[in-house]
Length: 355
Image: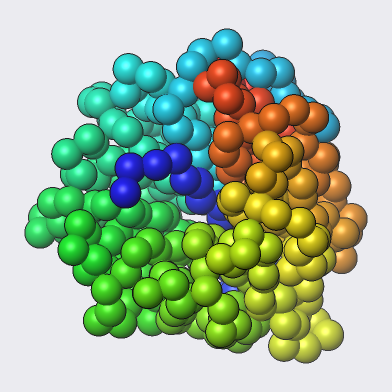
């Protein structure tokens, strides 16, 4: 299955004992790298936190700081583009991988080689060769959960996806393999012994399609691993929710169930609009869908975990007709029919600055 697909990604949950209100990256909101606060509660803050290595306050503006409702379209031609966290990667028509945005963990420094598909998450990125082999990069220091350690036995990744702490792939015979999860194992690295058509990885859960049905495993604190009994064409997993395109082209989302008043999870990202869709991609606090007429619509964006209304334009994609979409935490990217790419939303780490 060689086609354009995307990954959107992902944060931390209380199931890890880290607190539902803990930010996943210091500086993923403008100003966090210079506010004197330890926003992700890892013991380091501002420019002393490695997450801020690419922030304007720590190394100077990357060419486009702040937030914006839309980024300028790239003039390059792309085969695939993937968004996640606060960076994106794309594959040029000659197979070269380029990444832009945050690079604190090496997630935006791809290897040389020729690839045909890419997926990205918060701390790492992966790409596939035309022969089906995978290469992953990032995972530096404390952000190494084993998610970059592609198993030597995996030779033909027909479908693959990246999550916050893990990576999964489906072989040409439908066998699912997942790796990573070191220190963050909620069962998302143990897929059932089914024959899968595709797979998607969230923060501490994962889902796949088996004979048209959605099958999920891992953490289910928010209902993100309890899919409806529908027939699905595609799925995408986020932090507290999962969405899928049904056989009738409508979108269904599940999860977003807050365990308690101090652990909010519903930011409108499960409230999928009516319509006919070809693709759906989800992040942490919002979701986007590619409609069958080529337009992109997004929903959610009514706030975030600490109660603030964080709307950086991530729910306002530029007008136009698109062939594929990707969703990060506070930004998104889409590929037009002419293979150019446009991004929108927050640009604090230059994640809208398509090369």
